[in-house]
Image 1: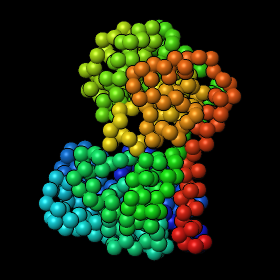
Image 2 (image 1 turned 45 degrees about the horizontal axis):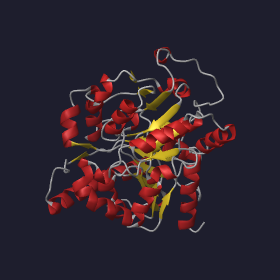
Image 3 (image 1 turned 60 degrees about the horizontal axis):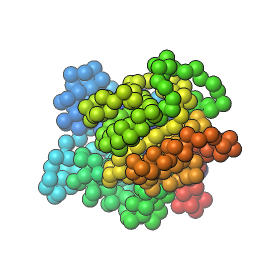
Image 4 (image 1 turned 90 degrees about the vertical axis):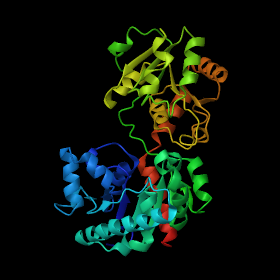
Length: 401
């Protein structure tokens, strides 16, 4: 492999076969435009194997995990997908740090043994490869010991150490993984500052978004299920979860502003289903919509919201929906967080019911066309190519190219 065209190995959180939109998948597709990429599925563990064996997909994964079948296959131009031929020991429940450390290293050894076989199979040299680890902190702490790649990068796009699954051991292992990596890439300023505590080579590369279908210049017909909803329509699109959205704030806003109509587009979890919002006549839940339909719904909202609940899990999140709102030329009001600061002056930020009401009132005023155009251009600049260019720049600096 010629210099400057080194293969990337992406150690991912999600299985490629699921076809879900994810940062790791988008980065793999962008990287593959000018170099080979191996996307590494997460290994199956004992607990998952027992749960998924009832389903055809789970049985197929289990066969690959025990070494039957094609573990490394070409999935697209310049992209290979590797499913590790190993079954990891389920260890997150273990509270004894010594025992967890020993078993985690054993899991990592098996994982990298399978990966090294895959690298040889496609004809690469592991010391010429660059690893981009998508927050797999348990595996990541042993990357250099068991793989020894040319460079080892760690990628953070969520504050996962605050998630219950990772919190006990992640608060110890992620800092260790960060400190051992050659560079850390994040998608928000908050996460970059967190990583810098353990590694000075921590860079916010921003967030790529797929905004091709979001066209502010196009006129979309009013969706049928919005026709009976009066204006002004204040809305949110996305997963409605009480873990990340401030239900109490939304209830207060709807009760205090009964002439405004609040529109929620997306699937609900139980906290939203049981909230008082469902009992209010000026609140409308329209359910899940196909991604291709979202531009029409967003265009016919008067103001778009990101009513984030601020907690350790959410505080560093990059809200991709903001780019979608702005790309459609809509005014945006959002909860004030460090991650949202980067969207100024194209959004209005609030942190209480009173400031939300003031911000929405301002957002409902006639639009400044030049400001709208600037906001659209700002959102459209958040591409995966822009993220990759920052990663490549760091790579060149580290390799003295």
